[in-house]
Amino acid sequence: MERIPMTRTGYLGLKAELERLKSVERPLSIKAIEVARAHGDLSENAEYDAAKERQAFIEGRIGELEYKLANADVIDPETLSKDKVVFGCMVILENLETGENVKYQLVGPDESDIDEGRISVTSPLGRAMLGKTPGSEVTLEAPGGKRQYELIEIL
Image (tube, rainbow, N blue to C red):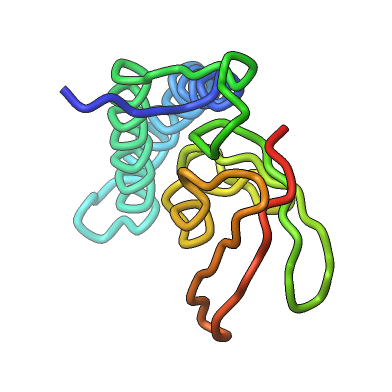
């Protein structure tokens, strides 16, 4: 069985989304289908088709979330060693071209949000950082060309 690494925050976020889908979105979808069905001929009813598509999306997402939560491997970043970059850790990088420092946390794909400083461990930068120690150079090929960073600190 595949274990899916995620932080406690990511786990709680997926759990909240699942609860919202089950308690709010699913009943709304069922009601929309009932309303559309009441309009008559289903073969030419775009409203009915749209409601059924929405229901299928919701049910698919519920299944996906239930799978991920059942197979979650919740990792507490506070218990991690600070000697090398691993899933869940927070890092400070210096862009060697611009001298700018950036701070990121390595998280699972479902938790990533660049605006919040959370990047996926499966992203090119995330993969390039794994196993690195402070003072190491991190190089990656980006669409705009090669980027180089220095790993300043693991928080």
